[in-house]
Structure formats: C-alpha cells, structure tokens
Length: 393
Ligand code: ADP
Image (cartoon, rainbow, N blue to C red):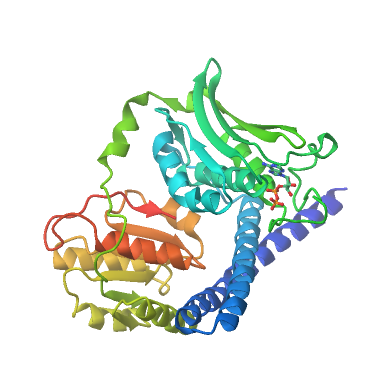
C-alpha cells in the first residue's frame, strides 16, 4: 500500500507538471494567433472573410478559456498556491466585476444587478476575484432571460455572498456532481462553451480561503450560489471609501499614445506590434533588455511601456519599468504582461501606480482599454505620479 501510494503521488505530480508546462508553452503561440486574428479583422473589408475570422476568433476564445482553466486547476492541485490576505473592499471588487461582465450581460439581454456593499474582507484578492468571476460567468452563461444578481451581506456567523440568476437551473439529481472536475450537465446536447472546470476551481479556491459553498437550484426557475465567509475574515467597514479615491477615467480615448513594447518572443512581438499599429498607436519594439535600454533613451512624456514580465533570467519587465521610472523621475505608465499572473501578483509587495497587469494570452480589447485609460490618466505626466493602485486583469 505504501508503494502504491507513493506511485500514485508521483503520477499525480507528473500530471500536474505536464499540465503546467503544456499550458505555459501553449500560451505564447496562442497569444500570437489571437493578436494576428484581431489585426487581420481590422484590415479585411470582405464580409465573408470577416465572418470566417469572427468564427475563428470564437474558437480562439474558447481555447484560451480552456487553457486558463487547465492552468488554474493544475496550479491549485499542485498545492503551490498559498493565499495571502490583504484588505479587500467588496464594493471595489463588485465595481471591477461590473466593468468586466456588463457587456456580456448586455449582449445576452440580461439585467446585471450588483448590490451596494460596505463590507471589507481580509482575504486573498486574486483568489477571491477568481471565485466570483467563475460564479458570475456561470450565472450569465446559464441564463437566457431575466437577471443575474450579486450581493454581499453581513450576518450573525459572518458574511454571505450570493450569486443568483433567473436561469435554466440544475436538475436535483445532478447537483451533487457539478463540483467534480470536467462534469457538465448535458442541456440537450448544448455545452455552452464551458469545459466543466469552473465549479471545481470555485470549490478548491473556496477551500483554500476557508469559505464554504452551497448551491440551491430549481429547474427552469434559477440558481442561487451561497458563499459563506467566516466572521474572522470581516474587517471594519471604514476602508470602503477606497472607491471614491479611484481616479475617474474618461470613457473614450481622445488621443493615441505612443507605445514602447518590450517582448522577447519574436512571434508575440511582431503580432502585438502589428495589432497596435493597426489600432493607430505608433509602436517601437525591442526584443531584449539591451535593445529596450536603447529605445527607452527616446522616451517622451505620454509614452506607454508594455513589457513582458519574464524578460530574461534575472530581470523582469516590472523591474525594467521601475528602474526607468527612477531614472526619468516620474511614473511612466506601464502594462506588464504575464502568462502566470497570480504568481506575479503574489510577488509584488506594494501597489504599483499607473501600471496594469494583464494576463497572457492577452485579451485584445482589454489591452486597448488599458492603453486608453493609462494614456488619458489625469495628472501631470511629466511630474506628479498618478496614484492609481496597480490593477490586475
Ligand atoms: P462549465 O465550464 O460547463 O460551465 P462548471 O464547472 O462551471 O463548468 O459547471 C458545471 C456544470 O454546472 C455546468 O456544465 C452547468 O451545467 C452547471 N451550472 C453551473 N452553474 C450554473 C448555473 N448558474 N445555472 C445552471 N447551471 C449551472
């Protein structure tokens, strides 16, 4: 039995290692394909070709989702994730979720109701967001008409976070299995673009955070997911004014910032540069830190630096950005890209102002939004830093 157990553990470690390596190595080419697809869509006028490209982009989206879910689950299973608690304003997270999901809800004709909350929790911000993103994503995916509601209230035993929908519901005999990996309820052969890992991730992350999850559902009426957060995670509500301190970013960009791109993978670099140029951004690119140092000599106020996090063995894109800021004496706006965002987030001890952290393969709309927001940030670009806490997407 001891030998069999050892063998099983070895096999499990090998599986997690394989998944993690495969997911990492697939990210770069997927990123390239994604950016090239978006770039070609921009320049092709023919309606038939555009339709094919749009179909292709749906397939790319679904592959990206699968890859991200595989990486998340393998990381969770390998036990390398240790939650690190910080003060998390529920209102702030809700605001971010609204920004992320409003267009999905609108496209599906659903009302997204997000209740106000003054609760502040002590928990791991990234993992907490991951749970809510999965639950909200499911609620929107499995609702054809009506509404999806997100609320958070304090009660006698702690905090209750509820994600409800007026959707298709789950058959009672399937409720027990929906947290299993790869399990999907077959809704008339329709799989709704899922991979069956969302709730497995929710369960595992909730366990790590000390939350419990319960699902109540009535077929054809809707589903209610209840996240019970223990009272010890609740902090006095005084922090919740954080929201009003966030700068108001203009909705639309009024100018196109110049971009300095630092990316060592040639495929990704060429595709990103092409995409940014088609979006109207003058783009200078460097394939190594040495090249980047030369390019950055030409930095002008208003330029935005986009850098890969893993540049070479010793230096990260973030180190490069911080060094540059020190040299020029102001917070040069930056976007840092990483295939392993949760680890990057964990390694940062203090918020980085005027900096966005985006996950690879990058979502092209997210990248453009980040550039527009940083390019239009209030404050004097030559002197005073724009004190926005780094945002993780
Ligand atoms: P998937 O990627 O298929 O969405 P999940 O693990 O997130 O995988 O969910 C497992 C299954 O549970 C889904 O296939 C779906 O049938 C069901 N499910 C999850 N959330 C909901 C919901 N809000 N309403 C109805 N069914 C749901």
